[in-house]
Image (tube, rainbow, N blue to C red; front, side, top):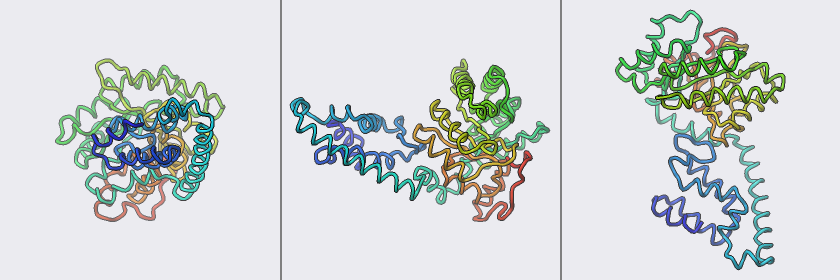
Amino acid sequence: ISNIRYNAEYMGNPALKMFPLFTRQHPSLLRTSGRVLLRRLSNGSEPPFPPNTKKVPILSDVYKMLTNRELFYQSKLTDGAKTNPAYRGIISLNWALFTAAGVIYFYYTQKKSTHNDAKMIAEPVADMNKNFGLYFDHTLLKADARASEIKNLCEEAAKYKFYSVCVGSSWARFARQTLDNLDGGRSVKVCAVVGFPLGANHTSGKKAEAVAAVQDGAEEVDMVLHIGKLKDGDFEYVEQDIREVQQAIKTVKNVAPALLKVIIETSLLNEAEKKMASKICAKLKVDFIKTSTGFSTNGATESDVRLMHSIVSPSGVRVKASGGIRSDEDALKMIRAGASRIGASKTVDIVSAHQAGGSASKGQTAPSSDSSQY
């Protein structure tokens, strides 16, 4: 902990320089207040706590110390103090009191504003109309999609600078080739769906489909988990199904590791099942958890996004909202609830309306069970 001062000065970050002050006066306060501070420091491209240690390496060491009581003692106490029962008892009591205060603090702040991380994601939007498109996976997943429509999808993505195009896995190669031949198209990623839209495919089939899509140029894979197995309580199967696809797309030869988004189809799950699906995704540290296919009984809701975000964000997993998002107002609600990616087919209308300060379909209700809901 004594080295943090020098690292802080080296990094030139005034906020980090506060840590030595905490250690001198109130060692236990560092554990509670430090966590609050880290949340503020980790508002880069991946805001969820724990912090993005790739961008700020020193935060990794700080975080480990804050979350490990013994490591905290070892870093703070001298050899003499460690052997002094009275001193250690005082520190233990101090630690317990501040920890209790921290729990109460976090309880009420979370209750008052459940998703500070989501707010950090959403805040730049108001000042970044030109970059609003980067929240979106521009999507075309209807069964009768044709090459001309995929080509148009790619052209729109390049023009409006969407983050990716989301297509069926068999279209991944065509989409990548089309984008590479467009001005601005090389920066647009290709996202392919796997086990879509039911999720009941055999794991070996999902793996093969995912690997083939990545080999064809997909940089992201949106897979549907096995919904029936989840509802049956066979969580081991669900976890292994996701893990095998995750490992497969991270180890494709001569290709950069692809991101994995797991679709849990929230409209078919009860509250407990949504929580369990989120916990599994958090445990596996997938890249995203996603609300819906857009082909079921309903799409994304603010409450589902908040619930998922609250469970997965501590593991660094992000949330993608999809299904029924048809206006800029809908999209902003999802972003403020915790989503850092939006899947939509009405993306051009949404972004155009946002840039114009209007709403793509204000007051309209999205359909509940067809592909246009995506």
